[in-house]
Structure formats: structure tokens, C-alpha cells
Image: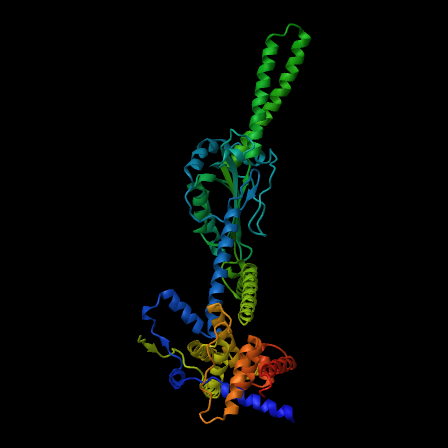
Length: 397
Length: 178
């Protein structure tokens, strides 16, 4: 009972000690509350400070949209940069002996270097491409950009300046590239003959050669034409552009194979062989006995045979690098859309899945970048909160 | 110095405005009393009180009643503002002590009451800042033990125990006046 009375007295004494706000302060604070705590006019404030003040005044859900937009923009930019980086590395991958496949711009101009090789090579073509084309094994196989594409046939030459340090022979400063192309054109059955005629004209205009051709008349699906062509590599782009103008292009695949290594290798072996022949001839001139002469002549015969074989191989390789093999088909029947020339529901589904895959990739890349940053920011924020809390408690003593 | 004032660009929800208005009316003097007892500086107490209410006003739409009483929420903001002020000035509340505000003294109080009040005031000065804060929250601000616990971030029983110890210390410091 006594304790309760003491407590009441203590409480009463404390209430009497309770600090009270001044009337002026209370009135001023009342006014500010009634006005909704107006902010000072931002006219004299620095733009950055003003922006910071506006950010602080925003509600979290108002900040969500701009933050999400910023994050999305960041993700897109990073993805584009990463994608371009990878694309640029893929496009320059033409290592010795390696095969590359790429889409060519229609009607692109041929390089002067490529045109320069054509004259001497065209003269040798009539000796037969087909037999020479398989004379030498190349270390690399051509590849295709399309699953349905056929393996590119041997073709002709292109000289491309190249960093010497990358070559197998330091004296070689160009690459021998074999080109090939496959193209399918779609036409109506009654137009097949006309289109085939235009193909011949285009081949002639490009100074090319028709190795094989077959034209089939008939109904849609049966009518068609097929051509195996050799086109000088320097005119390949022009020829393909001309073919594209004949009828609707339903598919096109370009392939390249670097045959620098076998070309240089065969050339070096040929030089060695010729040097050996010269040496044998000298030995033959200086031989004194019949037995000795016969032995040298036997070696000489064998070496000349080998030299001739190497010469044929080298010529074959030069032809492959100088002439591009083009396989051209003219097909009829079926809608152009079914062959990829148009756009239908199937294409739409394909496009949609492609877009979804890209979006998923973008999201993964974005998360991979933003995730650690967000985690770091969270840790920093938590550390700041802990530091602030400790500082406040310490301030109280 | 005159300052051009502009109204906030965004209108807050009317319900939140009304709730804040009621909270302000109910707690203005309590918050001031609590802050003044911590800072022992009338001018600073006015600034901090205004700052606390402004912060609460800006955050009023973020308040979630499920996470606690609005009164405890407001005093939590006021406590942080007062502690920030103490940190900024780099001093403890007791080092900055001013003479106890005499505004609460009644003109017609008896000599016994006056003596008791002075004794309690002197005893209050001897308390640790944390104990004085508990006394202020309980007797100046009129918070319940549950609200004190929410403000300090401790359990209710812990808050009650701490408060009991602080009051016991205060009573002992009064040296038989009570």
C-alpha cells in the first residue's frame, strides 16, 4: 500500500517535470502539419540535390518502375554487347585448314585480287574439272550453314592477305580459299524452261562453265532443273545475284574451305622433286659405267613420275581455289512458304520460340550480371544499417 | 530568413492524412517531452520533434498497422532522430544537460510538492541515459510497456524489467523524499 502511494507520488512528481513545448513552437508545428510539411522551393538547389530529394520523396512502388526499366535497359545493353562480341569472334575464325560458312550479300562486288586469278585458270578448266577435283585430299571438310545443305563441291581460288605468323609457311602471305554455293529457286512448271535459259545466260555472263545440267518438264513437283556450275570465284557474288533474280530464292548456302596448307605443301614437294631430278641429271652426266647409268635412269624415271603427279595435284588445287562450284536447282510445286520463302503459322511459332529463347538468354545474362551486384548492394545496405544502429546506441551512452 | 514554400507534388491518400493528423494531435506534446528529456536542449528538441513528425509524415503511407501500433512507430522515428542528433553533436545527453525545464511546475504547489519535485529532478539527473530514456518513455510520453518494447526493439517482459530497475534506481536516488 505504502509502495503504491510512493509510486503515485513519483509519477506525480515526474509528470510535473514533464517538458512541454512552447506555444510558439506548437503553433508553428501545427501550421506545418496542416500544410503537409511543404518543401522549400527548388530554385536555388543544385540539380543533383534536387533529383536526390525527389527520389527520396518517392514511394517505393513509384521507384519500382524506373528501377525495373533501368535494370532492363542495362540487361539489353549488356546482352547486345556480349552477343556482338561473340559474333565478331565467330566471323573471323578462318584458321588454316578450317572451314567457314557464311551468308553472302547478294550482288556483292568481287575483289580485284580474285578477278586477277581468273584469266590463267579459265584456260585450264577445259581439261576436266571433275577428275582433277578429287586428286588431292584436303585436311578439312567444308561445312554448311544449313542442315539440309549438301556438302560443297570443290571450287576455285581466292587470295586473301593474311598474317604470316598464322600460316604454316612463313613465306606465304595469302590464303587459298575454296568456295562453294548451293541455291534452290522456286518457279512455276511452265516457267522452268525459261528460267533454265536465264541460268545459262547468267553463267555465260560470268564466264562460268556448266558442268552438268538437266531440265525436266512436267507438272508441279515433277518439273524442275538442276545445274552443276563452275563460276570464277571473283564473279561468284555477281553470278549468285543474277541467279537470285531469275526466280524466287527458296534456299541458299555458301561454304568456304581453306586449302592453303595442301597447296603450299604440294608446291614445296614439287620443288623438292624438281631439284632431285636436276641432281639425278647431273649424276647421270657424270656416270661412267653402264650399271651406274641404268640405276640413275631408273631413279630419274620414278622421280619424274612423282613430279608429274605433284604438278597435277597443284594444278587441281589451284583450280579448286580459282573456280567456285555452284549447285543450282529449280524446283516446282509446293507453296513458297513451305520452303521458307514466306511466313506462316509454323514460322510464327518458330519465331516465337526463337524470341523466347533469346529473351531467356537475355534474362540469364542479365541475372548473372545484376545478381552479384544486387547481392553486394544488399550486403552493403545491411552493413550500413548495422553500423547506423550501433552508432545510435553508442550515442545514448 | 524567408523561404518560399511549395506544396507537395503528390496528394497522399486521404485516409493516411486523417490518421496522421490524429496521431499528431495525440502525440505532439509526448514526443516533444521524450525528445527534450533525451537531448536536454530545448531548441534541439524542437528541431528534432519537427524532424520526427516530418519523417513520419513522409513515411505515413508505408506504415503497416500489422507491424505495430502507430504510437510506437512514431516514437521509434523520434528516437532515431534524437539519437542522430546526439551522434551529430558527438556528445551524450547528460553532458549537454541544461537545467530542467521548469514549465511543469505549478504556481500554487505546496512546499512539500516543490521539494519532492526538485528531488526527483535531481535524481533523474543521476540516472544513466538509458534509464532516463525509459523513465521518459513511461512517464513523459505515457507509453505502455508493450509500446516501449516496440520502440526499443526488445521483448515486452524485458522492457518491463528494465523499466522497473530504472524506477527503483530513481526512487533510491530520491533519498527518502518519497
